[in-house]
Length: 496
Image (cartoon, rainbow, N blue to C red; front, side, top):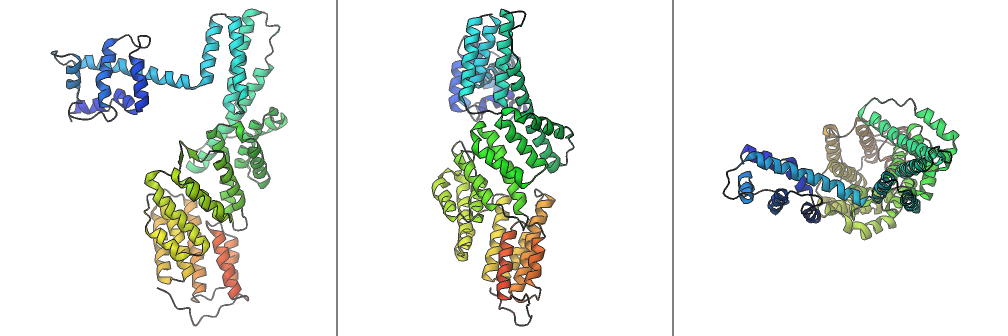
């Protein structure tokens, strides 16, 4: 393809048209042929030619010269004419994009209509429209930052309308607008501080968080302004900046009782904050937040937060299964497989299901069945590879297959060392798991005289991903050697 044709295929106009779904293209067809939106017949004819190439915009006939000849038969090609048509069609397309987005947002539509009546000094119609819009807002249980901002907008229009009716402003009450603006500002600041705090930790980015404590104090003194949504965001940020169990349980209880206050995206962020705390607690051997983690996942699933556009994201699905198993909820794990497997993306469902079945069989002690599930799996990403390594290591440990176990250990170490996407901290958590799995396995084989009780004490002081399984294996060894003594000599025959 000549360079100028490449630039045409990759132009902003073609990129825009390619992004439209078939249904949107049909709507744009109506839009571009409407005299109200477009009064240039050459632009609509240009669209009629281009739409035939949607969505790929490829082929031998997709060239500037051919398209020009269809528009202007018998006329010499003029690049500037096609550039002008492309520019005008793109402008119409962007107007269409803004228009359909505007029509989908009921509040933006009603707000714009209020602004229209305000501009016309139609006091009666303005008051009616503001009251109607306010009623629509209040009818929804949602009380997120957008709600308070929208209420502030309405109060602003109501105030401006009142000023036109009474220029002295004597009867104007701005308290409602002040309260709505405060709540919007506070929730938005907490959300931004949360993002900044996460970026600081993940990407070593410096942000000025000095005013956060001032914000905490201010909001505490106001009693959260009577807003549960503001209280929840306060607790989210408290949990992130000064984590403790009391804040966790208070946030968990409050969001459970008030989850309808938020749109799904915002509710998802809040629940993920709770899961993050569970993760941090569960890597500590002395803590166990698996039941709390399971309860959060169940709430997210019940609230529709784990399924988007009728699709269950593979990693969230397997996370839900594993979380259920760790909490001892085998029945719920099975229900996930029977009730939600059909919502997995077709290209990922087989792998995810095989991994899920393998986890369940390991939990049941059916190690050969687990191996069969793992044998047919493919590994498309690092999460699947790491998960499989954990499962293979556990299976070979349980079966006493030393050759396979140590081969799996070497493979696991190699993967961790060479995977650049893993943070240093995450690598250390998995390396700790490998380290103590090896220690316990050598004791199990009578190849080490190390005291399993001493190993258990080390595990209890070390952050480890998978520590609960290690502690269980240490206890099993202690039950065989209650005095904590192992005599080296005859070793258990190695299985191959």
